[in-house]
Length: 114
Ligand code: AMP
Ligand code: ZN
Image (cartoon, rainbow, N blue to C red; front, side, top):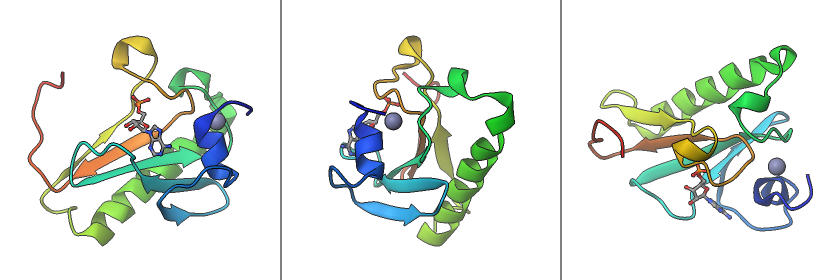
């Protein structure tokens, strides 16, 4: 989608530190990390937020989640723990309107979130 910064990363129009990619998704390091490990996982297909994922595309959500788990295992944080965040629309703090999971780890997280 035009003017979407994450679509531009997918199309290699702007650079990113890519951690993983396959035919459905890519994962890359967040440019402003909030933890020692802060990776974003996004579908190649553009959906603005969770609210825009149609029922017939629901498999992309499990694919992204299980890939986040696999990356956590590969980074060695699975046992100690990690946090996956899916901000959805304005009140959540979503700033980039191409759906993305945040994978955060290698530090103790706080609850409740801000
Ligand atoms: P959210 O607030 O959930 O929409 O999160 C958007 C995230 O995208 C933030 O953590 C930003 O630091 C991150 N971000 C924005 N632009 C880029 C970029 N060009 N490369 C990597 N991460 C980015
Ligand atoms: Zn996009």
